[in-house]
Length: 321
Image (cartoon, rainbow, N blue to C red; front, side, top):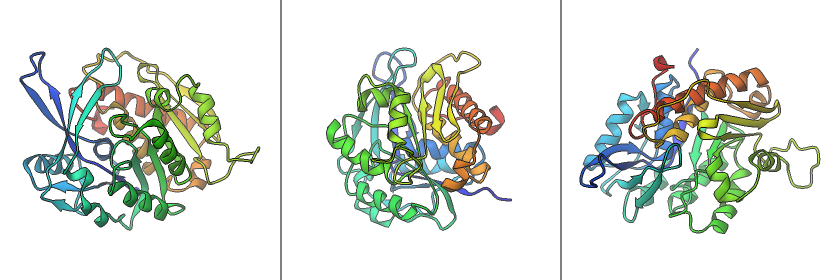
């Protein structure tokens, strides 16, 4: 039986990564948080589509070719003459989060063609990221409308992945995030995300709070997420959900080249796991036990580790795990 379709919606861009310390030579890598997640899910065997505006320029061609090679459909994407969004990437030390300088004005990420985004009829799992397209108009309003339309029809997965340089300020971002939390089923976020959103808070405490509907001491309402997944870099990952608090740690060290796309690879691996097991709504999500979560998190941690051993966002194929 064919697995449900994973759809990753949002921006596609090109990461410019320094090829050496001189700053004169740059490596152009396909990127964008939801784009990377789509590539990861497609390579890991899930029927996958990317949904976002793509350019007809040379970088746009690179993005489309990369999707084809990764078994990801882009056929419903609007194509525009506006240039592809660029991100200049600076890698931090060890497993620290990389820094991004975005060139967005007049590009695909803020194209009016986002009005033409429509979910495929066979969508089973929808993934969005709060990195760029979900905070920049006109894309933001269109994608929120898609989230609302998908509610109760598919499993909705959110990676907040805030980019401070485009977020419009922390308080404004938190107001947006509060709306998103009422529209999604699963939230995946990193320890670095949490530190920016609520400095000093314990991630597990934050997860419990986000899972608790306002005024409902027993929890369980569908106006809040049903599961919060937390990634911790070299220290693994955890989930807070109906099955409890489940934590995993990597079983081997990774020779880190860079961490660009590691979180997106983790997200794509989780999306592939949901699709492979037919988890397309809250009822199925609530039925996942501790063993399932431990296995899925271990799978995603291993996939992210392989991505860290490569330059740029380069998720592994299923055969590599």
